[in-house]
Length: 111
Image (cartoon, one colour):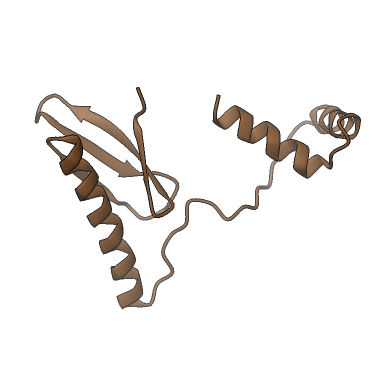
């Protein structure tokens, strides 16, 4: 069962609240808090879209940059032996370390 929804580049995690008999969603990966709910999937989807649209409109009205889930830059601190092994694996596959790591992270994130 998929417990995420995506809209306008924002991904939300969905949970069911049995106490209130509603679905609750929270946008992931940004500092700001965006949450929404609905009794049905259709209501949940509509409220998600409305919440993101409202967030973006509020940011524009107040001159703030909306939070983005990721910039595309990632700094990692890993043990030197892992770094060396990854560099060797990248070279052996004919790829840059950046390309190799990007593919490895993409595979792990979608596994």
